Length: 75
Ligand SMILES: [Zn+2]
Image (tube, rainbow, N blue to C red; front, side, top):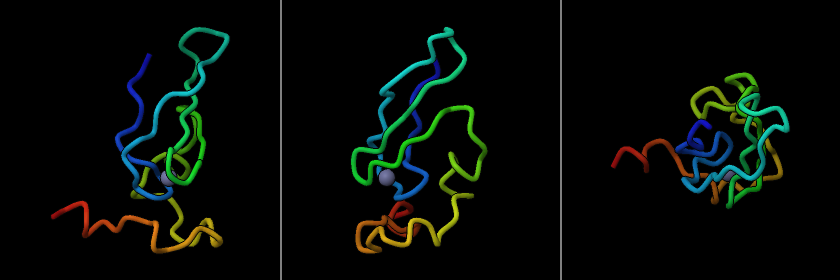
């Protein structure tokens, strides 16, 4: 089983635990961010799983003040 991602693709939160696994062992894992509740499978594309490639305009209803900026993570 792969380790859960270090950051949420949507908001950069660091608590993104594995919450479900495939009935077929090893096929995929499902993660859910504990801050914004964005959920995704390990097999989805980088646009859905990589914080650096996630569309910044999505989700529009998610408040910007809860999104951790890349600058904050570098300090
Ligand atoms: Zn999140």
